[in-house]
Image (cartoon, rainbow, N blue to C red; front, side):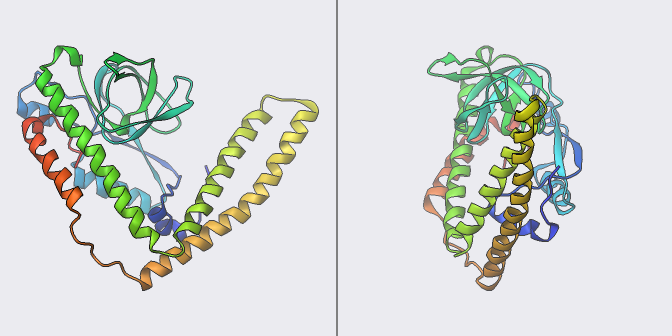
Length: 287
């Protein structure tokens, strides 16, 4: 497990780095919810903290340089929607691209991974179910049963809610990017992070290859891995330097509160109108 210096953790959070550390398992608030249950029971089906409590748990874990692992407690099959734009992977683990928030899917199994549990899913696109793929369970809202046996109005309203949720998240990310871009150290910090992350991925590939090759090829791979490790020391130092500069600039140039963004407010009003129709089916971790 690779750790970045603790004293630059806060800075890196601002530019998108996630630190690794001792794993901690917590109960998932993403359990499938029964559409046939009374509203009060549907709300009680999610085992876990409320949205605000979940955020506090995550922040506490991060402050201790830890990763919060999620245990998917739902059944082995069901259906749901992606909550925002998210990556999807082949059953072998290869990243295939992204799908937007509000994408309908069925899942038939839950697979363990090095990160969060993955749902073996088929995406609904162009009025048909795609080939099997994997979705991170933390990026989804899931339900029991089959969407084709549920009232179409319920499915339609859930789709609209999560589609708008995805658009809101994307718009907020765009606004945040514009805010960070005002910092003259933002681009350098982001490039340093990306270079370091690319080196970690390359090291993983070389380590995996070293386990399978022999002879002269193995010597060459180990030499390349050794050289990369030395390079990572420099890259990590650059990450620390640029992150510190990024944070110091922010501290001396506090951001002013921007005026309310009309497009964001419009999306939020539209989502609240839909939420009222299916409020008891929205997982508590979706704000």
